[in-house]
Length: 225
Image (cartoon, rainbow, N blue to C red; front, side, top):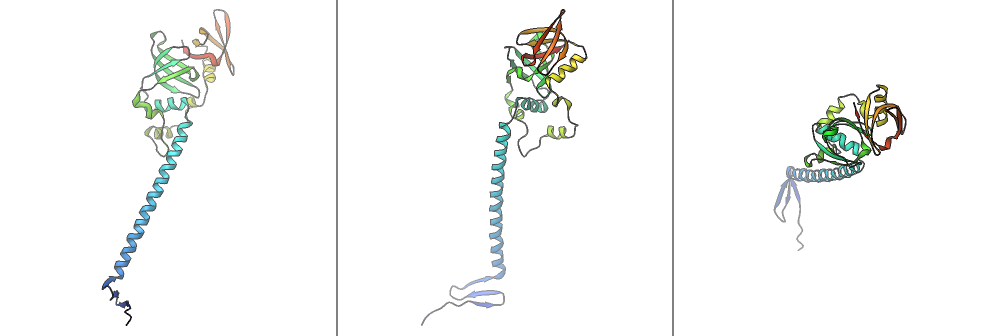
């Protein structure tokens, strides 16, 4: 005689005589809860991994587009009192602190050498290298994608800063308007006098009764006297 297993339902219980297994409807519901929770956890892990990968890609792209100005500005914002070393294109070594960073220039305080110690307006194109202490390298890279730093929050609470919008020529025009005497350090040497005119790519400096036209690309930094 053929032996067939039969399944019976009694009350809220499924009864399978073949293996004497008894399971309640509540137990089956619990199994489904665990299954769906596992699926949900797995999906969350996959979404988190996808988000991390996307943020990593965006962060690499952000870093690839960083400019020297942005590195110096980020460093100044995070550590205004940090001391840096720099080498200019005329071979001059500087020990300095950054006071402000503009569009293509920086206001710096020179600590060494002693002959030019004090405040200078530095054209960023004059830099051939900048030495950053190892502990400040990460901060100089700015805020990673997906994060907000304390100094970012401080910047958001301020009005937009004019210095970041004006270029080197604009700053020199203001010096010219004030008729301040300056010491200019250029690829051709030093020039001392007053700025009479600042054009789009050059300036006029009067010194000892003579006038010199200097290309702005050859001007490294200026000291206001």
